[in-house]
Length: 311
Image 1 (cartoon, rainbow, N blue to C red):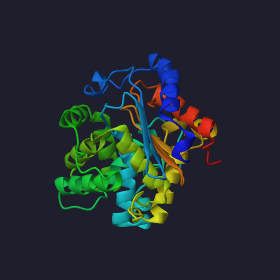
Image 2 (image 1 turned 120 degrees about the vertical axis):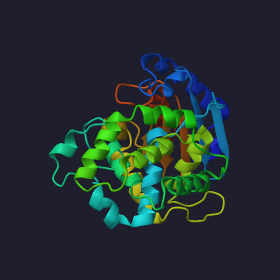
Image 3 (image 1 turned 90 degrees about the vertical axis):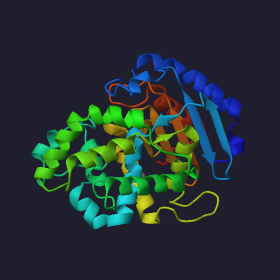
């Protein structure tokens, strides 16, 4: 997809068309700090193969990655540990259950999370990152994000991380259950501290679009061609984005949109069109499954308008 196919005016019009969907959803106020977001905000960045960028809407908005961070930690854990170890502790199958469900852990044998995109799986993946301390692991994760975005100013929101940690009782339960069954190791509170800071990494739409481009571009830096993520790992990440990236709406999303994508309850949506364009969207008004109402519709509009479905 070349820049010339879409203009800033085109993107502004598409954003204006989907703004009405923000009225149908609700911000994620179960994490108090996220509840402060403007429910009517919509922003989008497109990062193209020629290095050009289009950004429109409420483009000054910054937001936290939340579950979009799961694809980043998955890539880093696979680079650290290898496929065999990672997938001995986390499965590869989609689920129709909510992202924070504990029920499958109780019924699966062996008792491991179905995939890395649900909370239980993401916690297990974060537990596998290399580092002697949670601070060292966080430093490595932030350095990886800096590499993916070419933005060394990115850090995490202390306010959001604290708010998430203080309301993390369900994730804490998931951790203790998995520790009992040998899926995670070490101190649960240290893991939760790292995980909440991981989810609270703060970006803008352009950062998100750059990450999407690298993943879609087989893991290569858009400017230098340097291999940031190994090819086979970029493929694994894209596959999980298709099958599990939009929680238990992933099947319908694949049919309607057909772009590898990952959402977060901050309202973030990342799209990775193979060899085409990286897409970063923010709109914090969510549907009942935790996906951005306007963000989903905008990505569907972009996909149909420019024929971007991979299917």
